[in-house]
Amino acid sequence: MNDEETRQCLEAGLAAVREAGPIALEYFRRPMAVSDKRSGGHYDPVTEADRRIEAVIRARLRREFPAHRVVGEEHGTEGEGAACWYIDPIDGTRAFISGMPTWGILLGLVVDCRPRVGIMHQPYTGETWFGAPGIGARLRVGDRETALQTRSQAALSDAVLYSTHPSMFPEPGLMGRYERLAASCRLQRWGGDCYALALVAQGGIDVMVEGCLMPYDILPLVPIIEGAGGVVTDLEGRTPLAGGTVIAAANPALHATVLEIMTGRAAVP
Image (cartoon, rainbow, N blue to C red; front, top):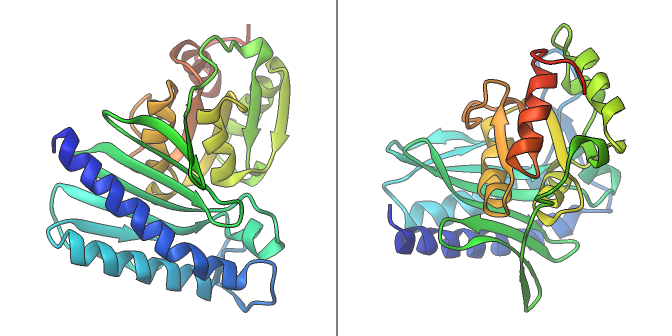
């Protein structure tokens, strides 16, 4: 897929999330029915907004890209091929049902195992972060559009670290390594979901470590963060095609330091 084809996919994706955005606003900060879809383990909420948003985006993608595969959180996988769209209709459903505006609509395109297009749309705040090769990473608010840049010189000692919740680190030893990482940073905060990952691209947050992710939770954000100068990998240092525990950092040197700490391969500086 060349850059012009990628740009066409980006524009189609942006149109899809804009079409779906008003559905979320029908429910946000209003009484809504919430179901629990867990099959054991932690509370896993889903709303009618999740299902409706994904259905709208899927329908548009099917019309415009019938040869592409589509994977979504609520309606599974359809189609086949080297080009695959990932949909998380409301990333941060717990925030959504709580009235916190840190959720977003995620849509990403992966081609031949490479994240090519990424979109994070927050209809309540009117913000849309997006990224693609040849475009970099950008933030659109209304008619205003700005280029995004991570903190390219951020080091561990002055880094701002975010993660959504401690329960994302259930593996033995992982929480202990995270605590050592947090002790070495300037500031650590909990919360954020996809909104905090978008702020890595924007330069407000330097490191985001998340666990227990599915591919649709992270792949749409990879082109945004990387397009702004950051690095996103799993704990093996690879593109997180399968999700799992993921490190997003503002620059390669900071990412390498965080990766060493989170894998236990180096002592904390």
